[in-house]
Length: 277
Image (tube, rainbow, N blue to C red; front, top):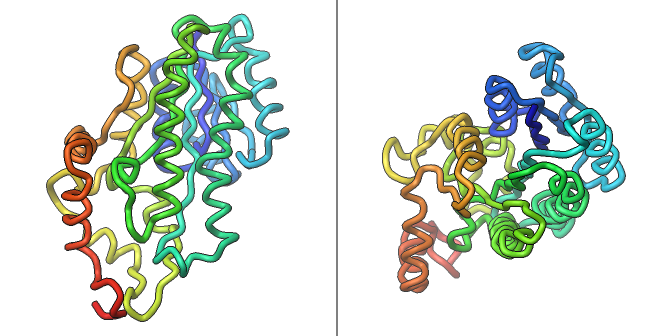
C-alpha cells in the first residue's frame, strides 16, 4: 500500500489532498497545528488508512518523531510521497510587517521544508518511485509586492525543488512542486494585512468578491491543487505544476523581460512614494 505524509492537512489544500489520496486507497498521514481540523478530517474519513497528529512544522523533533512513527507502519518502512504543504502569510508593505512576523513566515514556509527534506529522505529512499512534493506559489514566478517575505519564501521553495530534483536522482527520489494562483483556502482570509492609511484592509468577503471570475488569477477551489498533487505522482518527469496551467506564462515572460512583468504589476498597485491611492 502506498503512503503519503501531508503537512498543513487540517484545512485547505492539504485537507483536500488527504481526502483525495485516501479515496485512491493510500495510507495517509495528516499533520497540522490545528487539532480541531484534524479531528474533523478523521470524523469524515474514519480511522482506516488515516493517521493524524498535531505537529508544529517548526518543531524539528516533533516532525522527526511523526515521520518515524508513521513510517514504522508502512511497507518496508518507506514513504511513497512527502507533501510539504503547511504555509502562512503576512501581507502589507515590507516596512509595515513586524520583523518577528516576517521571520515566522520564513520559519514555516521555508525552514520547515528544509527540516522535512532532511527528515523524510531516508524514508523516501526506501520506496520505489517516491516523490517529495512542495507547495510553492504563483508569487514564486515574480516577487509580489505587499507579500514580499511570503513571495521570497516561495521562491526559495521553488529553487530548492529544482536543485533537489537533480541531486536526489541518485537516490531514486523525485522532487516537484505546485505553484497555485488564487486558491480559496484559509490562508486567503487569515493572512494579516499590516496596512497604513494608503492601503485599507479588506475583509474575506471583499477579497472573494474582488477576485477575478476568469483568467489565470480567478479564484479556484483547494481541490484543484490536490488534483495537481495526485497527477504529479503519476507523471515522473514534470518539475513544476501550475494551477491554473496559464500561470506558467508569467514564468516564461519573466525569462524574456522581468522589467515588463514589473511594469504590469506596478500598474495594479497604489502610487509609490506618495502615500496616496
